[in-house]
Image 1 (cartoon, rainbow, N blue to C red):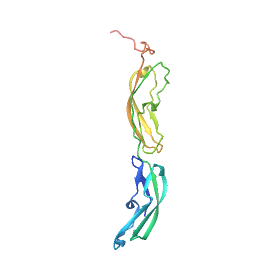
Image 2: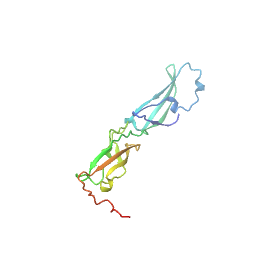
Image 3: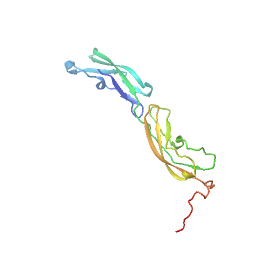
Length: 173
């Protein structure tokens, strides 16, 4: 038998099969009418992330022929699913100087982690950001897995707080 890493699927579950930990040649037991290989425990979920001792038992006709114990490391290597939505902000309405990345979240999910963190390229709310700005949002779960989504931030200035003086002067030929 050999130690094994068990990766949870996108729904946060995994089933450990005897073939994943068995290293022995079973031909010596070929005379046994029905060889049963049992893994205990064999099912894992998000609650099981970490190291566990697993037993593989070989039995025939209800008689245990042999068993071995291995360490099974249960891990979450599945990234979250990032879902983003565009947003619009208006200058001069008490907005902070920068936009928080989680404001673009439109239902991002993860199979195991209840807590997701969000980061994005920095967009400072200023006259230079007027218009539509692309935003790349990175969604991370508690186990370091990430996914990204792209969206947009539209910065408006209906009160014309930026004024018209931001244009370069006209030049004559």
